[in-house]
Length: 109
Length: 115
Image (cartoon, rainbow over all chains, first blue to last red; front, top):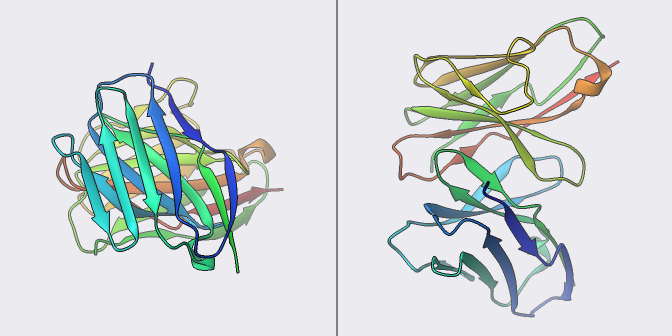
């Protein structure tokens, strides 16, 4: 059974810091890997999608990498801002999506 | 970008009544839609997967007679919570996907409160 673990569970940083969020899978049969952010009481916003044949994707200050051999993905956020405060979720898109518990990020001004 | 509209955003109902939640893909054809449930401070729990024109596939432990899912068109899926109980109170989120390798897009969720 596929399980997704996200580390850390919570993170609080001052504005401007670079940070890394981690996601790992118990089953290395990774399909597409997608990172989302969720604001309180809201749905999910897609951030980056890494196709199974790719190793990384970049969008603005965000960079996500995928290492299928180890079953890990990282989300790198450069020069963090208070508006980045949210819960970040990763998911492995197989036949159905499995989500991690998320990393709750707080960026202090 | 692709937009998924979920309605209503909030609903309060009495025990024993039924509530219907709609999920629409506004600018793409959703061959597959997913329904999730989320408790406070927890991640999303997949309830069921629906493909247009066929019966939904429910996850283990999810009662299909209680959570009725209909995916009658490529742009609309509905989740009906039948005979609602207070323990059904939760945040329900739908998501939709076009082709197999395309990104998944989420609705903004529905906060259901059963009194």
